[in-house]
Length: 291
Image 1: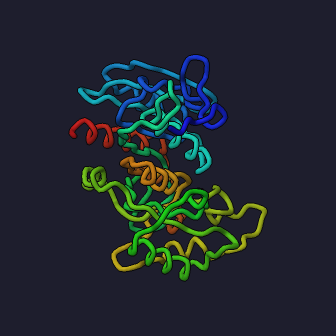
Image 2 (image 1 turned 90 degrees about the horizontal axis):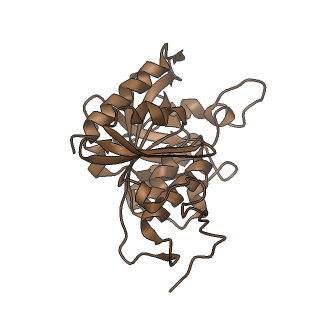
Protein backbone atom coordinates (compact mmCIF):
# COMPACT_ATOMS: atom_id res chain seq x y z
CA UNK A 1 0.00 0.00 0.00
CA UNK A 2 1.54 3.31 -1.15
CA UNK A 3 0.80 6.07 1.37
CA UNK A 4 0.99 9.55 -0.16
CA UNK A 5 3.15 11.82 2.06
CA UNK A 6 1.81 14.99 3.66
CA UNK A 7 4.16 17.07 1.50
CA UNK A 8 2.59 15.66 -1.71
CA UNK A 9 -1.09 15.60 -0.73
CA UNK A 10 -1.71 18.68 1.41
CA UNK A 11 -4.89 18.50 3.47
CA UNK A 12 -5.83 21.45 5.67
CA UNK A 13 -7.20 21.46 9.23
CA UNK A 14 -10.81 21.03 8.11
CA UNK A 15 -9.97 18.00 5.96
CA UNK A 16 -10.02 19.87 2.67
CA UNK A 17 -7.56 19.76 -0.25
CA UNK A 18 -5.11 22.65 0.07
CA UNK A 19 -5.67 25.04 -2.86
CA UNK A 20 -9.34 24.42 -3.61
CA UNK A 21 -10.29 24.15 0.09
CA UNK A 22 -12.89 21.50 -0.75
CA UNK A 23 -13.65 18.27 1.10
CA UNK A 24 -14.53 15.20 -0.98
CA UNK A 25 -18.25 15.38 -0.14
CA UNK A 26 -18.35 19.04 -1.26
CA UNK A 27 -17.48 18.20 -4.88
CA UNK A 28 -20.15 17.27 -7.43
CA UNK A 29 -19.61 14.70 -10.22
CA UNK A 30 -20.09 17.43 -12.85
CA UNK A 31 -17.60 20.30 -12.64
CA UNK A 32 -17.59 23.59 -14.56
CA UNK A 33 -14.26 25.41 -14.56
CA UNK A 34 -14.01 29.14 -15.21
CA UNK A 35 -10.97 31.36 -15.30
CA UNK A 36 -12.57 34.43 -13.77
CA UNK A 37 -13.52 34.09 -10.07
CA UNK A 38 -16.50 36.43 -10.64
CA UNK A 39 -17.88 34.00 -13.20
CA UNK A 40 -18.57 31.40 -10.51
CA UNK A 41 -21.51 33.40 -9.13
CA UNK A 42 -22.59 34.28 -12.68
CA UNK A 43 -23.19 30.55 -13.19
CA UNK A 44 -24.39 29.47 -9.75
CA UNK A 45 -27.09 32.16 -9.77
CA UNK A 46 -28.98 29.79 -12.09
CA UNK A 47 -28.80 26.88 -9.62
CA UNK A 48 -31.98 25.87 -7.85
CA UNK A 49 -29.93 25.42 -4.68
CA UNK A 50 -26.38 26.25 -3.55
CA UNK A 51 -25.04 23.83 -0.92
CA UNK A 52 -21.40 24.90 -0.57
CA UNK A 53 -19.41 28.10 -1.08
CA UNK A 54 -15.64 27.99 -0.56
CA UNK A 55 -12.80 30.41 -1.38
CA UNK A 56 -9.02 30.20 -1.12
CA UNK A 57 -6.87 32.63 -3.10
CA UNK A 58 -8.24 32.79 -6.67
CA UNK A 59 -10.02 29.46 -6.28
CA UNK A 60 -13.73 30.01 -5.60
CA UNK A 61 -16.09 27.03 -5.61
CA UNK A 62 -19.88 26.80 -5.49
CA UNK A 63 -21.60 23.41 -5.38
CA UNK A 64 -25.33 23.14 -5.89
CA UNK A 65 -28.13 21.62 -7.89
CA UNK A 66 -29.68 22.44 -11.24
CA UNK A 67 -32.80 20.31 -11.38
CA UNK A 68 -31.62 16.80 -10.49
CA UNK A 69 -28.00 17.44 -11.49
CA UNK A 70 -25.40 18.28 -8.84
CA UNK A 71 -22.74 20.68 -10.20
CA UNK A 72 -19.62 22.33 -8.84
CA UNK A 73 -18.35 25.56 -10.41
CA UNK A 74 -14.71 26.36 -9.63
CA UNK A 75 -12.53 29.25 -10.74
CA UNK A 76 -9.05 28.32 -11.91
CA UNK A 77 -7.43 31.64 -12.64
CA UNK A 78 -5.49 31.98 -15.88
CA UNK A 79 -3.01 29.59 -17.44
CA UNK A 80 -1.89 25.94 -17.62
CA UNK A 81 0.01 26.18 -14.32
CA UNK A 82 -3.25 26.84 -12.46
CA UNK A 83 -4.94 24.01 -14.34
CA UNK A 84 -2.20 21.68 -13.09
CA UNK A 85 -3.31 22.52 -9.55
CA UNK A 86 -7.05 22.34 -10.20
CA UNK A 87 -7.16 19.08 -12.21
CA UNK A 88 -4.89 17.22 -9.82
CA UNK A 89 -6.86 18.40 -6.78
CA UNK A 90 -10.24 17.63 -8.35
CA UNK A 91 -9.00 14.13 -9.09
CA UNK A 92 -7.62 13.72 -5.58
CA UNK A 93 -11.01 14.62 -4.13
CA UNK A 94 -12.69 11.66 -5.83
CA UNK A 95 -9.89 9.13 -6.22
CA UNK A 96 -7.76 9.37 -3.09
CA UNK A 97 -8.86 8.31 0.38
CA UNK A 98 -7.93 11.28 2.57
CA UNK A 99 -7.91 9.21 5.76
CA UNK A 100 -5.50 6.52 4.61
CA UNK A 101 -3.76 8.73 2.00
CA UNK A 102 -4.02 5.92 -0.54
CA UNK A 103 -5.49 5.68 -4.03
CA UNK A 104 -8.96 4.19 -3.99
CA UNK A 105 -9.31 0.70 -5.54
CA UNK A 106 -12.22 1.87 -7.71
CA UNK A 107 -11.65 5.10 -9.58
CA UNK A 108 -14.33 7.69 -10.42
CA UNK A 109 -14.62 9.80 -13.56
CA UNK A 110 -15.71 13.43 -13.38
CA UNK A 111 -17.38 15.43 -16.12
CA UNK A 112 -15.29 18.60 -16.43
CA UNK A 113 -16.42 21.43 -18.68
CA UNK A 114 -14.46 24.64 -19.17
CA UNK A 115 -16.64 27.71 -19.78
CA UNK A 116 -14.42 30.56 -20.88
CA UNK A 117 -13.42 33.17 -23.42
CA UNK A 118 -11.19 32.77 -26.41
CA UNK A 119 -9.83 34.34 -29.57
CA UNK A 120 -10.96 33.11 -32.99
CA UNK A 121 -8.38 32.16 -35.61
CA UNK A 122 -10.89 31.82 -38.44
CA UNK A 123 -12.67 34.61 -40.29
CA UNK A 124 -15.85 32.51 -40.37
CA UNK A 125 -15.99 32.23 -36.56
CA UNK A 126 -17.08 35.75 -35.57
CA UNK A 127 -16.95 37.52 -32.24
CA UNK A 128 -19.74 36.49 -29.83
CA UNK A 129 -19.90 32.99 -31.38
CA UNK A 130 -19.47 29.83 -29.29
CA UNK A 131 -16.82 27.16 -29.93
CA UNK A 132 -16.55 23.59 -28.68
CA UNK A 133 -12.96 22.36 -28.86
CA UNK A 134 -12.66 18.96 -30.56
CA UNK A 135 -9.02 18.79 -29.45
CA UNK A 136 -6.75 20.70 -27.11
CA UNK A 137 -3.38 21.38 -28.74
CA UNK A 138 -0.80 22.60 -26.26
CA UNK A 139 2.21 24.78 -26.98
CA UNK A 140 2.47 25.40 -23.23
CA UNK A 141 4.68 22.40 -22.30
CA UNK A 142 2.73 21.36 -19.15
CA UNK A 143 1.82 17.83 -20.20
CA UNK A 144 5.44 17.09 -21.09
CA UNK A 145 6.15 16.86 -17.36
CA UNK A 146 3.84 13.81 -17.22
CA UNK A 147 4.14 10.45 -18.96
CA UNK A 148 1.74 10.56 -21.87
CA UNK A 149 1.39 9.03 -25.29
CA UNK A 150 -0.48 10.29 -28.35
CA UNK A 151 -2.31 7.84 -30.61
CA UNK A 152 -1.31 7.47 -34.26
CA UNK A 153 -3.75 10.10 -35.55
CA UNK A 154 -2.68 12.60 -32.90
CA UNK A 155 0.99 11.98 -33.73
CA UNK A 156 0.33 12.77 -37.39
CA UNK A 157 -1.51 15.99 -36.51
CA UNK A 158 1.35 17.09 -34.26
CA UNK A 159 3.98 16.24 -36.87
CA UNK A 160 2.17 18.30 -39.50
CA UNK A 161 1.56 21.10 -36.99
CA UNK A 162 5.25 21.38 -36.03
CA UNK A 163 6.28 21.39 -39.70
CA UNK A 164 3.72 24.04 -40.59
CA UNK A 165 4.24 26.38 -37.64
CA UNK A 166 8.01 25.86 -37.30
CA UNK A 167 7.58 25.48 -33.55
CA UNK A 168 10.54 23.45 -32.36
CA UNK A 169 12.28 22.65 -29.09
CA UNK A 170 13.23 26.30 -28.67
CA UNK A 171 9.58 26.83 -27.69
CA UNK A 172 8.02 23.58 -26.52
CA UNK A 173 7.11 20.11 -27.71
CA UNK A 174 3.47 20.49 -28.79
CA UNK A 175 0.97 17.87 -27.67
CA UNK A 176 -2.67 17.19 -28.49
CA UNK A 177 -5.60 15.48 -26.76
CA UNK A 178 -9.13 14.84 -27.96
CA UNK A 179 -12.21 16.14 -26.17
CA UNK A 180 -14.58 13.67 -24.55
CA UNK A 181 -16.85 12.36 -27.30
CA UNK A 182 -19.58 11.66 -24.74
CA UNK A 183 -19.69 15.38 -23.86
CA UNK A 184 -18.91 16.88 -27.27
CA UNK A 185 -21.97 15.26 -28.88
CA UNK A 186 -24.23 17.45 -26.72
CA UNK A 187 -22.66 20.70 -27.95
CA UNK A 188 -23.15 20.70 -31.71
CA UNK A 189 -26.12 22.95 -32.46
CA UNK A 190 -25.13 26.57 -31.91
CA UNK A 191 -21.43 25.74 -31.60
CA UNK A 192 -18.54 25.95 -34.03
CA UNK A 193 -16.05 23.12 -33.63
CA UNK A 194 -12.32 22.83 -34.18
CA UNK A 195 -8.94 22.44 -32.53
CA UNK A 196 -8.35 24.79 -29.60
CA UNK A 197 -4.71 25.81 -29.17
CA UNK A 198 -3.47 26.59 -25.67
CA UNK A 199 -0.71 29.17 -25.26
CA UNK A 200 1.51 29.78 -22.20
CA UNK A 201 0.87 33.54 -22.22
CA UNK A 202 -1.43 36.30 -23.51
CA UNK A 203 0.94 38.67 -25.30
CA UNK A 204 4.01 37.25 -27.06
CA UNK A 205 2.78 33.63 -27.09
CA UNK A 206 -0.43 34.81 -28.78
CA UNK A 207 1.40 37.04 -31.26
CA UNK A 208 0.58 40.38 -29.62
CA UNK A 209 3.17 43.12 -30.02
CA UNK A 210 3.34 46.02 -27.56
CA UNK A 211 7.02 46.91 -26.96
CA UNK A 212 8.75 43.56 -27.44
CA UNK A 213 9.65 41.82 -30.68
CA UNK A 214 8.57 38.24 -31.39
CA UNK A 215 10.75 35.21 -32.09
CA UNK A 216 8.12 33.74 -34.41
CA UNK A 217 6.20 36.73 -35.83
CA UNK A 218 4.33 34.55 -38.35
CA UNK A 219 2.92 32.17 -35.72
CA UNK A 220 -0.65 33.56 -35.76
CA UNK A 221 -0.82 33.35 -39.56
CA UNK A 222 0.48 29.78 -39.45
CA UNK A 223 -2.06 28.79 -36.81
CA UNK A 224 -4.83 30.33 -38.92
CA UNK A 225 -3.69 28.55 -42.06
CA UNK A 226 -3.15 25.13 -40.47
CA UNK A 227 -5.25 22.32 -41.96
CA UNK A 228 -4.67 18.59 -41.79
CA UNK A 229 -7.41 16.56 -43.46
CA UNK A 230 -10.65 17.52 -41.68
CA UNK A 231 -8.77 19.11 -38.77
CA UNK A 232 -8.36 22.86 -38.50
CA UNK A 233 -7.55 25.26 -35.68
CA UNK A 234 -10.59 27.28 -34.64
CA UNK A 235 -9.41 29.31 -31.65
CA UNK A 236 -6.78 29.75 -28.96
CA UNK A 237 -6.67 30.51 -25.25
CA UNK A 238 -4.70 29.45 -22.16
CA UNK A 239 -6.26 26.39 -20.46
CA UNK A 240 -7.84 23.81 -22.76
CA UNK A 241 -4.91 21.55 -23.63
CA UNK A 242 -3.98 21.24 -19.95
CA UNK A 243 -7.55 20.28 -19.03
CA UNK A 244 -7.82 17.75 -21.87
CA UNK A 245 -4.36 16.29 -21.33
CA UNK A 246 -4.50 15.89 -17.56
CA UNK A 247 -8.16 14.90 -17.72
CA UNK A 248 -7.41 12.04 -20.11
CA UNK A 249 -4.45 10.81 -18.06
CA UNK A 250 -6.56 10.86 -14.90
CA UNK A 251 -9.60 9.24 -16.54
CA UNK A 252 -12.04 12.16 -16.61
CA UNK A 253 -14.36 13.40 -19.38
CA UNK A 254 -13.41 16.93 -20.45
CA UNK A 255 -14.76 19.54 -22.84
CA UNK A 256 -13.81 23.18 -23.43
CA UNK A 257 -16.56 25.60 -24.45
CA UNK A 258 -15.62 29.15 -25.33
CA UNK A 259 -17.26 32.46 -26.14
CA UNK A 260 -15.29 34.27 -28.84
CA UNK A 261 -14.40 37.77 -27.67
CA UNK A 262 -11.78 38.57 -30.32
CA UNK A 263 -11.24 37.59 -33.95
CA UNK A 264 -7.54 37.75 -34.75
CA UNK A 265 -8.13 37.47 -38.50
CA UNK A 266 -10.66 40.29 -38.88
CA UNK A 267 -9.08 42.24 -35.96
CA UNK A 268 -12.44 42.66 -34.24
CA UNK A 269 -13.19 42.63 -30.51
CA UNK A 270 -16.61 42.03 -29.02
CA UNK A 271 -18.72 45.06 -28.11
CA UNK A 272 -20.21 43.25 -25.11
CA UNK A 273 -18.08 40.46 -23.68
CA UNK A 274 -20.35 40.03 -20.67
CA UNK A 275 -23.32 39.32 -22.94
CA UNK A 276 -21.28 36.82 -24.98
CA UNK A 277 -20.28 34.94 -21.83
CA UNK A 278 -23.83 35.04 -20.45
CA UNK A 279 -25.11 33.55 -23.70
CA UNK A 280 -22.55 30.74 -23.44
CA UNK A 281 -23.43 30.06 -19.80
CA UNK A 282 -27.13 29.70 -20.64
CA UNK A 283 -26.36 27.35 -23.55
CA UNK A 284 -24.14 25.17 -21.38
CA UNK A 285 -26.56 24.93 -18.45
CA UNK A 286 -29.46 24.20 -20.78
CA UNK A 287 -27.57 21.30 -22.30
CA UNK A 288 -26.28 20.02 -18.96
CA UNK A 289 -29.76 19.91 -17.50
CA UNK A 290 -30.90 17.79 -20.45
CA UNK A 291 -28.50 14.84 -19.93
